[in-house]
Image: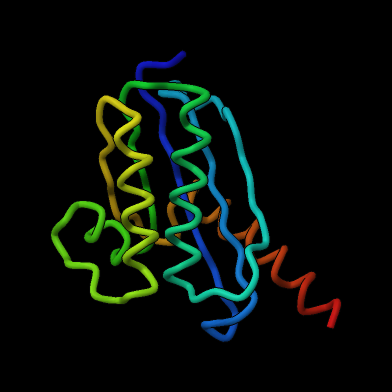
Length: 140
């Protein structure tokens, strides 16, 4: 088990709402890749996909730590809502926000930080999601 892990998340939806994907990368404090995952999640909004990525990422972090989780996301909305700086007004996000908060209590602490999409870890997850969504589009 690690004292601290870094969780980078991203969600994407085409046509918002539309076909969506959620993904994450978990790294150790020494930058070793512990897990990388991306999944198609059906018809969702972009914000729903961001939350689903966070929830799935936090669940996976339990295999690596009970200590500190440092979450990075390019979604300012997600970060500000999880920091409780912004209220969750959208009904479709309220249950996802609660679910993410429940997952977060499994750790000593969870810290959220907003990164630009160009951050290397965020852009890696973004590329995975877009590749998946491109295949969905190509199938239709």
